[in-house]
Structures are given as C-alpha cells and as structure tokens.
Length: 477
Ligand code: FAD
Ligand code: NAD
Image (tube, rainbow, N blue to C red; front, side, top):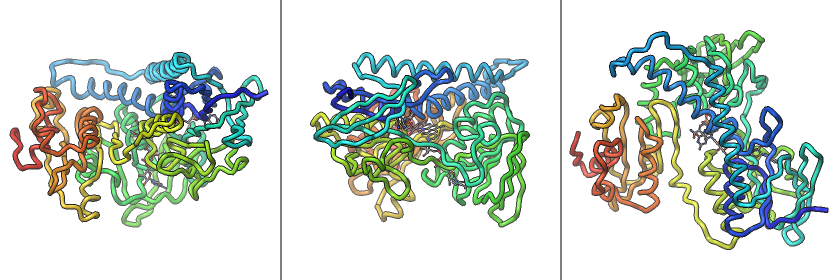
C-alpha cells in the first residue's frame, strides 16, 4: 500500500526543504525525502549547502579569519597575543556542531510545518499526474512506496572530478575532504581557482599552509567585474596565495604521502608541483543518480541537467525540478527561490523569480559580491552606461574597522539612470550587496540610492557614495 500525498519533494537541500515548507504553508500535504546521512547514520537534511557546502565552509572561514586577525591585525589595536596556535580538531568540532544545528533546525521546521520527512533514497517508479506519480523510498528499514500528483525534484549536484584523478578524500579532496582536513598541510595544491578553490585555499593559507592554485583559464574570476577581479587577484597574491592562470595539468600521481602534478604554465613551460594534499574544485555536475529519470522518461539535457522551462516545469506533467539539478547558477539562494516559487505555482499562485537580481558572494577576505551586470557585459551588449565608484579607504567605518581594502562600483543606464549592476570588493560585501539587490528589484535609479539617508558611520555609506559617483558628485572622495 502506498502513502498518498499532494506533493513529494525529492531532496532536502535548500531547494527541496524550502519548497516543502512553502507548500505545507499553502495547505498541501507534503512528503520530503532525503538520502543524506550523518556520521552516525542518522538523517542530515540540508543537502550540500548544510553538510559540505555553504555552512561548514563559512564556519571554517570564520575560525581561520579569527586566527589571521589575532596573528596580524590585533597588534595595531594594542592587543598583544603570544603563543598563538590553532587546534584544528577543535575548529572541526565546532564546524560539525554548526552543521548539526542546521540539520536539526530543518527537522524542527518540517515538524512545525507538518511536512512528513523520509530518510532514504527516492526513486521515480512510474505513474502520471492524474493517477499520481509513484516514488519508492529505500531507507534503513526497507522500501516504502509513496504517491502524489505533484513531484519536485531537488537532488542537487556533486563535485566534478578530473579524468584519472578520483577523489580519495585523503590526498585528493573534493569540497567534502577540503572541509575535513584534520591538520594544516604544509603544501596544499588546488586545481581550479573558482569560488571553492579561493574560499578553501584562503582557509588553509590563513592557518599556515603554502597554497598553490592552478587555474585553466587565462583570466581570473571571469564571471566577476574585471576591475573587481583585478583587485581580488592583487589582494590574494599579497596575502600569499600563489595563483597560476592559464595552467594546464597534464599528469597527476597520488600516493599516500602526497600528490605530484605535472603541468604547463601560460608560457608553455613544463612544471612540477608536489603537494601534501590536493583540492580539486573544477565545478560541479547535476545529480540524478538513483532518481529513476529514465524509468519515467524525465528529460535531461546534454550536460545531465534536468530540462526545465523558465518556471521549472519538466517535460512530464506534475514533475518539477529546482536548484543545482537544473540550469542557472549553482547557488543556495537561487535554489530556495525556485523551490518556493514552484510550491506557490502548484498551489495556484503566480510567483516570479528574477534571475538578474540573484546576488553572488565569494566569502574570502576581502569579500566579493555583485548583483546584475558587469561592466564588460554592458560593453559587450553595447549598452550606454555611467559608472560611479567609491573606495573603502575613504569610508570612516572602514578606517575604524582597520579594513579599507576595495571599493563599491555602481553601473547605471546612461539615459534612465536605472541601476544595472553593483560590484563590491571589501569588508562585509556579502551583507552590503542586499541593498543593491533590493534597489534593483525595485528598479531603482542610482539617484534613488544617492538620496536615501544612510546611517553614519557605516560601510553602507560607500554604496550611497558610489551612487553619488554615477552623477560625478561623491562627497567624501
Ligand atoms: P543540494 O544542496 O545538493 O541538496 C540535494 C539533496 O538531495 C541532498 O541532500 C542529496 O542527498 C539529496 N538527494 C539527491 N538525490 C536523492 C534521491 N534520489 N533521493 C533522496 N535524496 C536525494 N551557495 C551559496 O549560495 N552560498 C555559499 O556560500 C555556497 N558555498 C558553497 C560551498 C561549497 C564548498 C559548495 C560545494 C557549495 C556551495 N554553495 C554555496 C552552493 C550550494 O551548496 C548549492 O547551490 C545548493 O546546495 C544547491 O541546493 P539544492 O537544494 O539544489 O541541492
Ligand atoms: P567554479 O565554477 O566556481 O570554479 C571552477 C574553476 O575551475 C573555474 O575557474 C574553471 O575555469 C576551473 N577549471 C575547470 N577545469 C579545470 C582544469 N582542468 N584545470 C584547472 N582549472 C580548471 O566551481 P567550484 O569552485 O568547483 O564551485 C562549484 C559551484 O559551487 C559553483 O558553481 C558555485 O556557484 C558554488 N559555490 C558557491 C559559493 C558561494 O556562493 N560563495 C561557494 C562555493 C561554491
């Protein structure tokens, strides 16, 4: 006998668990299935984000930033520190606790919202929207069958490995192993200087590792505004990250004591790199393993993503897909927005997700954040724009914090003054970008931001000043 629901959500990462909660709020009888297990074999909802992504990486970034500050920044405040040390197992224990609190938080939210949670692997077995889609859940205690007319697939993504270099999570690490290193490696190699490479590379560099990143592209952080990327490369290099662009890894050999990489630099010269541990962060791929997509004829695209329209409808009536398993940026907040929107569509509402106002954040120091278009994108599109920028060096709060690196840059349409993009590198960029996202969502002009009273002294005044800069009238620079 199968248990009947209005909606079954497969996957309880940010896309799935938010979809389940939103649908339950709207009165649907919802089941959510997730396969992730903690070290004890218990349920660990929250997906990549909670278990081996956003949350644990930010916990380690915070610990390592404290260590860096104590070692390098406290002295200027008159604070003396002697015998500074890092206890990696304690740092990891704290990270594990933060993850556990988030897992438990989601289980609590399921209970509060009356979402029925199943711990196990969900597989589409057959059916259709009118008789219901059948989903088998293979858990610890055997297999159950559920049925519902509506399904949301939110099965996320998994790390991409390089051919001939499998993850062993001891020497050759994916994000999972990179977040669980138990002692600071002397030499750490990273293939791929993208978001994970820079965040994880920063953590272990701050704690004392010598970190070398090999990036295939000739350009650094190609998705970011070029001016921001240039400043970021300068700062990261100054901090001690060795970043080689245009690097081609030709051979790798992993042994229990380390990894040797043969690679060719941008000038075409053969190089060798020997490291104790290697992080491979060359992107992620959609995860549909065990889902039963082929059983029911769920269409995937050439790269393995579930094919969806702008509203996250798949080729099968009643089956939707959201988050990393579909096109678009692999970001937790993008997955959440899609999850909530699909739940509302199923309940008969007409929500809208604006992909142009999805913010991007890289949690390095300095932080990098942006929303909207980069200057190079506007140029390529032939769009007439004006730019205003403001350095944190001229911001009173940044001086008081002792963190004056970077700037805010605002791009606005030359004719209408509508804000087209905001790019920040500097302190608390991750928090400051929210104002820009709100402004863009409301189709604000740069003058709107310039005329809004911002508290003094705050970093947010830099956003106002950059907006004033669009009209060529910054007041403090
Ligand atoms: P996931 O979070 O991957 O969740 C999918 C869930 O589905 C998993 O729990 C999986 O076990 C489960 N599942 C899969 N198949 C089945 C099945 N058949 N049956 C049952 N369950 C199944 N994004 C940000 O926005 N900010 C960040 O700071 C950030 N940091 C990151 C750091 C790292 C190191 C990594 C790797 C990623 C980071 N991301 C960040 C990206 C973010 O984690 C993803 O975009 C987000 O988790 C995607 O959510 P999702 O719900 O689509 O999938
Ligand atoms: P990424 O796409 O950010 O970076 C991968 C990098 O590897 C790119 O610069 C690419 O050019 C390079 N690369 C690819 N193949 C290579 C090769 N053979 N040799 C050398 N370099 C190579 O991917 P990621 O860092 O693995 O992160 C995966 C996803 O997780 C990203 O899409 C990102 O959205 C998400 N994420 C987000 C955050 C955040 O929002 N702060 C943090 C971590 C991860």
